[in-house]
Image (cartoon, rainbow, N blue to C red; front, side, top):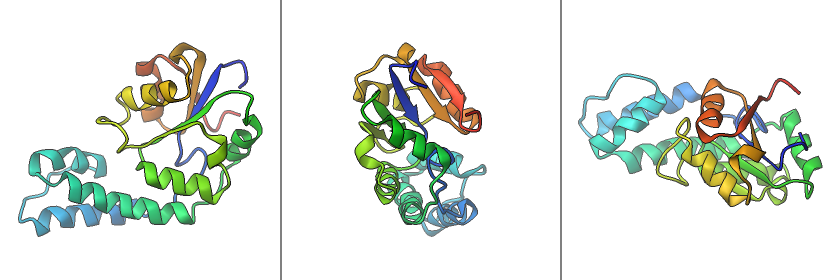
Length: 177
């Protein structure tokens, strides 16, 4: 890993496993649409979030998702890559780029004593776009003072891999240590 000038980690599924029932979150977001008297769009949670802007529900939907994430961050089990992050302290700049809200990222990192080891945290609500758009990862790379071509993004999903490719960083799946 230290052959890179910087490392950026995804959070959920990479450093910790957020204790979130995503099916329940989706149901709660659908209820936001129903409570507003709107027909909810089809699709998964992230499609519901994407449609929230057009429905005028972005704040309510984001708040609903973030509340679940913050709560899940408080009891998120630590994953093996968290130990790697701690061992990298001071050797290379480290960032976290997540589809979760920034506050949940910070809570989870703090719960496991990792926040001090991270130079930048960018969540879903930190920039105007979200993964797989490259901007969240590029913002993280800028925040740690690195260049995309000298950075590796470590994640657990195809979305993370696509984000890395679009941002011009290297990519490594978390399960390939």
